[in-house]
Image 1 (tube, rainbow, N blue to C red):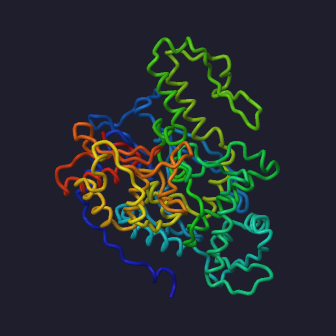
Image 2 (cartoon, one colour):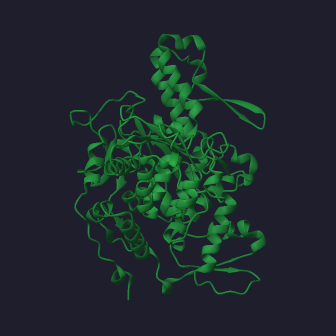
Image 3 (tube, rainbow, N blue to C red):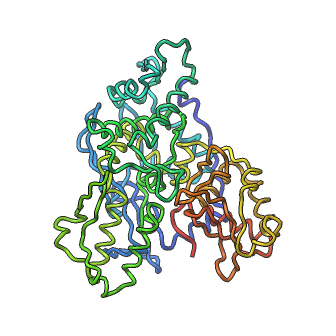
Length: 506
């Protein structure tokens, strides 16, 4: 039986009320549309009147950028490319996928249909499509022989010697000197051990996020830890992450949110800085409020980077050291800071990671996912223990006195208990910024300062907000004093779903 015969039949349900609400609240966000001239996906934003928003000057509330990867050649072993942040309408992606012989494997209509599926059906469709892209066993397969004591060096040498076609072949693993036939278990162990080692902060390639101790971000100073081959490591990491998705294995490392957006080519906005460095985000917001007085603080278009005690001035734009920040160019300064913090600091590393990743996974295949779904696909659905979650939850505000016994909190936990693992993971993403659960359970949940900050439900009046709000730095959800269980359930579900779009409900 060939792969095509194994394809599942999918049924797309009519749009739910939730989907309609999600679309109606996309008023200040971007929508992925199809470009009529060449049938490529592009991002479009509409203004309040429903017209295409064509404003060009940077605006902290509305402007966005998309990470674009341009391939510079078609080398089958080490393809070169360059990443950049562009305005979203320039971040186009093909809307079809071709097989190795050039025939169309997936069409625009296939992708458009998959985008409307449930998460489980999206996963099945993705896996079925990868199975069709996989090189048949009789065309060749790869045997990966590695020594456990030299796992990373052996693995990197093996993976980096492969062509793009080899990356889509079946891999069989053998740990040298150990008995065992790889029927899938050794492959699963290899992916787990390799990704666990490369994401270890002690290796110096990644570091824990300043705002979420469960998430990893690229170390801008990775060259110091691996001076000769840090970029090769990132190309290797990208290939391993892509192959893990391709072969239905998991990655042992949750990344910061904007990196998932970069992989997907999703718009990033000024608010994304808050998840990277809240203090820096607030300082830039403070500059906006200063007006003409901003010139008195004597800053220019540079930033100071410090590595191992050595300080270095980095220009945000060419000649930035000679450009003073004044009220008239403040939007351009904030724009330059956004670009630097979301890409410039580690542009070379992310460039290699994405080149490796897209050696395996076709870009159009990812357009069916949002960034939360991508994290769940790569890292797996966590096994969330509701009893442990409830035991280590704190209650503040209007819920301080009654705590878990308050009627609204009772409704909250009843609703969460009825959620499947996907919705529980999405709730966790909404409140803490990641679907990851500490190894010791919710008692070890940390805040942005590295201290223990338990999951917190804060009671607020309906005059404060209609929908639940999250504060990921504090692992806190503001839960309004709803009058009925049905209202609490509906508003919570909408808030969680809207978080996956990357835009807030006002």
